[in-house]
Image (cartoon, rainbow, N blue to C red; front, side, top):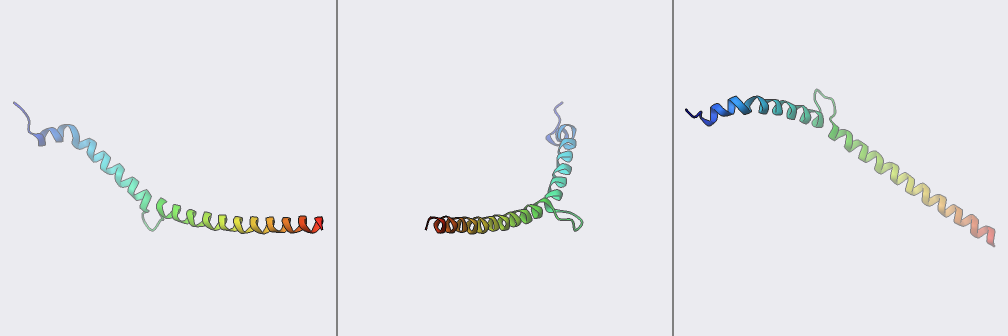
Length: 78
């Protein structure tokens, strides 16, 4: 006698899918954050902003240093 699709689902898949649902909820919780704790998404946003500021600072500092070096070289050659 053949079992119905629903019976086969409960015998074979239900336990595995329930485990996957729990793990998926944990992953989503880590990404979004839980209990007023920021998640990984928010952490990455902050890091991205900080690195943009650091990169901008390095570009400005590098440009100022290069222009000062060029000034010194041209003043030395005169």
